[in-house]
Length: 393
Ligand code: GLV
Ligand code: MN
Ligand code: MN
Picture 1 (cartoon, rainbow, N blue to C red):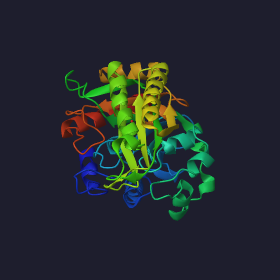
Picture 2 (cartoon, rainbow, N blue to C red; picture 1 turned 30 degrees about the horizontal axis):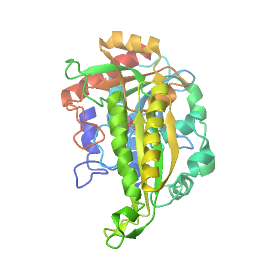
Picture 3 (tube, rainbow, N blue to C red; picture 1 turned 135 degrees about the horizontal axis):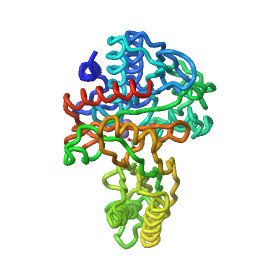
């Protein structure tokens, strides 16, 4: 089945009333997607395995030095249809076409559905690949909590998985290369009139939790001069994040905030906000975050509130394997470009030569319902994956 048809098959899974997709790790929608992945890979005659972290890997052949392709099926809350699924359906379509043509690989080929790439439920991105590669300790990951207070360990158990099986995965030692196809995030390919690109690097990035504490009090009875309002410190921090990042063409986003107690006629007692920060180098990321924290501390002093900051996850700079990148750029006659988005490919790059292909996104919008690619470009992405597999496989 073609990639566009495969996308149509899962179009209603995790669909929200806002027209987007909320497919969080281990929720009903991703459970349904896991079953769908299992049935698609079975239909292709692949042998499905699953590691202790919930990553699904479907094999065409056995042995060392396998070529891994695929991506993830989870999304951010209210995300788009392609971030993740495009890489999975392109891999399935490419394998189907190759099987139909009678081509046989000279090395094993595996299609992966990585679990919880977005970190939309437990706060840490690329949890499945981090666990599999040993980039996060299983006890740290299993203790992460979702918004309802459930730990990953508890959720795994509810879904019939043994938390004790989480951790570094043996199957990775059989992988020789990983190539992940992904929808472009940002708008570079359209003005360069290129349907496809090859990634050079991923910017270093991190997620930081800011807890602002103040004094809850009455909205009418507390004079303005007597307040210790954490909402003010929070607001000053958001403004500082924008200003500092904009000054150096870096990225700083506060996309999630929780206000306690969340009452219209009360001064909040505390505000928790999450900063997502990204920059071209590790030094510039550190400087960006330090400047934002310094502004937050100054604002807290002025308001008489307190502040604590904790990095929930950080990922260093990733430079994709230059030889593989140049080989694929030459093979596909595609331009190379860096990305500000994070990917499982960035985690795997520390273990095996890894590359990423981007499919043109006409609007450049991602992590939102209007994320898109044309049917023609999606087919071009699949054709590129076929070429890549024939070349490397
Ligand atoms: C994932 O897409 C991220 O960049 O956070
Ligand atoms: Mn994403
Ligand atoms: Mn993705």
